[in-house]
Image (tube, rainbow, N blue to C red; front, side, top):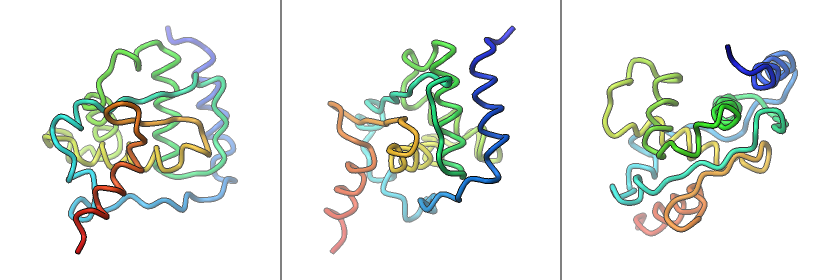
Length: 148
């Protein structure tokens, strides 16, 4: 049986979700997403840091916020700290893009993680790459360095 609190947190989110403002952060198409510029080493060092679901206060609605609440539930169940960024991206890709479930690398899942990190001030879930650099900032730096 699942613990009660993470389920209560999900219920609270879905209950107020339709009344929340829509997220302004968009998920980019894969051909424009800066996560495609990340090396395999950088993809391997992605980590997700989430508060417990009971402590999460989501202030907007949209895919990054739905993903954030799911990540907080994973954290409440005690499994998130053992998951690599690749595994988290694969799970999110499976949930939000079922038709792309077997894509390798799971770039759609990494794009969701980038959007989660971009909205981290609104929910408290942070995604880092390497030695603790924000995934959103790191992707922006990569994109700026490669554009003429």
